[in-house]
Length: 183
Image (tube, rainbow, N blue to C red; front, top):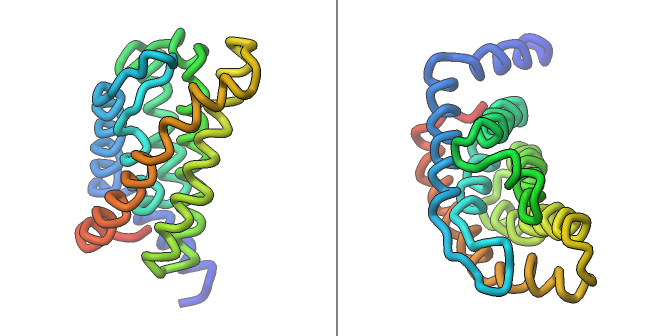
């Protein structure tokens, strides 16, 4: 099979009933992960399960699928399911956009590099910083606080648990790749 035919075949398999169902399940997991949170008294951002789910999505799905999952999640947030327009535009809203960008970058990397240890390192050293970048920039723009205060509120307290979530996502991805076809 030539390269063009393989590309066409892969694009067609993305939009199967099973593919769409798994995308809907991951969108639902993102919404649920929004409610699994630990509020921080010194920040408008909370520790959530979102980074775990975002990393998992990036490791399991193709970039086009991720665009559909993230767009659905953000649209549902605007409609009040798992968030609101105010939250998307508020101090912690940048994390959602960072999640979308990070998931796509993770997907692109995981399609090229199949080594699980390298993928896990990518989650930690590229995916998480991308999420923090978007979150910190939006918090800075919305609150107009100095950068040291933003770092304390939007980045530093999240690092330890986010690293753990990267390892958990990699472990889950290893198991789920047996069930979820790689697109």
